Length: 240
Image (cartoon, rainbow, N blue to C red; front, top):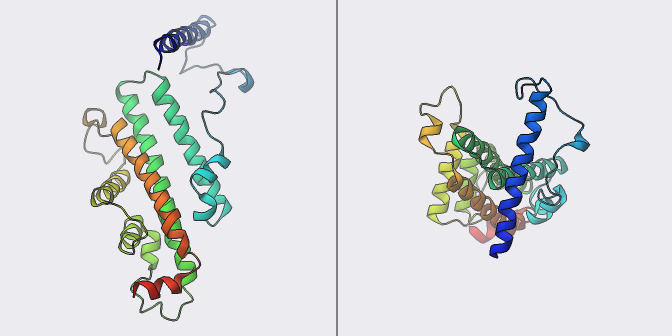
């Protein structure tokens, strides 16, 4: 970025920060004690996230191939809404100086959201392939069959899709995804043994890794998995 534009950004951020502080001063001078005792003006008069930063649901349908990968409209929408939330988290971590435990917890929630999207895509693929295999007379003897457990458990589904060459990950990518999934499943405030702030497990690096794996999984399912949604018999003959 050119130095003059960078300087403009920095000065604008200083002014935005000043105005935010001024708004909080106005509220306190008016007798409120945010956030315990707060005051909220109408939605149309609140601070607005710049238009276009959070992509539309329809844009995610296209960029993440949801029409091809996902069967049910509500599931497509729910995945796209979760992707919109990821844009919002992205805005927060890139535009605000968030620090300490709040930064860690923000990355934690952003991470959980991304892994949940990956899980949805993998299970969607497994179930849609099975929809065309379940009427096959050979299904009970077919080694390529995705069992009920495979279709309900992400790690099992991932393992089967990996063995069948649908999800073509490197060993490092595969192991990283399993680790991220296990980490997501162990997130319980009461049962967590470590101090999550001092442990610093949830950070920008972990979040970026989860985003990269999401994009990889999406591309692999789109290129390799959706071809089998309506051609299971051909797939069985090809691999047996």
